[in-house]
Amino acid sequence: MDGSGRQTVVVTGASAGVGRAAARMFGARGDRVALLARGRAGLEAAAADVRAAGGQALPLVTDMAEWDQVEEASRRVEEEFGPVDVWVNNAFTAAFGRFGDVSPEEFGQATRSTYLGYVHGTRAALDRMVPRDHGAVVQVGSALAYRGIPLQSAYCGAKHAIQGFTESVRCELLHDKSAVRITMVQMPAVNTPQFTWLRTHLPRHAQPVPPIYQPEVAARAVLRAADHPQRREYWVGTSTALTLLANAVVPGLLDRYLARTGFDAQQTDAHPLPGGHGNLFEPADEDRDYGAHGVFGAQAHTADPQIWASRHLGTTAALAGLAGAGYALLRRRAGR
Image (tube, rainbow, N blue to C red; front, top):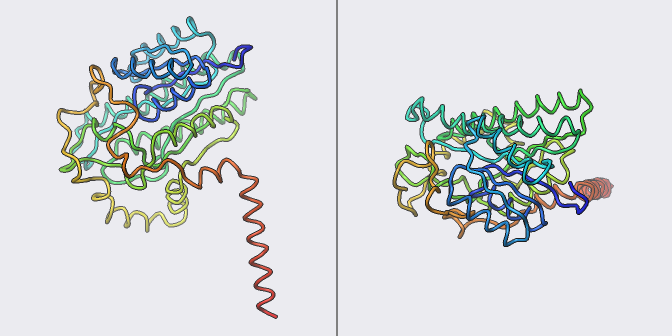
């Protein structure tokens, strides 16, 4: 961070969805924002958003699955913007369908782009942050980092891997008493272009499992995590909290529930099937900008009470304590 308080921030997967919304919000704070993604048109539009919001933008066409490209982009960022203060890993690709319908090549590409993309981003960030003993890495995760669901085996596997990888690296940083922090933000279903451009083997248009949130909800959590990376993990949305709690307590019951509901919940008849082969091997936004939002805006939420509670843990704990004390008092009076 320079004397002005402005930071140098890297956002991967910045051309659309959560990355696009987060990049715009960092820009609104006046930060210098490096945007990494594969799609040239989406990147240029995202850079325009950052500049319009009041920040500086550096769009860099980068495939996060390729270490040499990530290292070169990192070098460019520090050459033009100075030392990186915050690195946000968000880029991913996905293949929807039953595991048996997803080819080994598709599964491998989704894993390289998503899991190894985060590994490459984290390595590039820590190679620069650790020697300076300063910086924060924010991993954009998912409730699916803990709870696998049908039709998303490649994505769920990658997010589980990112969770374990991040825990390992965090422990190493703590062991070294490093001031560098790494945190993870577990997201709910988000209305992004992903569901229009992903590789799909489904008979109907893919959709996120409701409830669905707008990407700005997720982006605000990313900025909070970047500002407070001492907290090891953030949960975003009531659905995320309930899913993770249920998986911890009754995972077998959740298996059966998802087996019964998970197929229809992830498909809709309201939209035609997307054309082409998705963005798995090539960017979908090379010549067209999709923006931050997907096609589910009419049903997407812009706020959630769990997020307020997460940001005000002290107040939430106090209210819970008062509620518990009041309940105990009522029971004693009833007993009399």
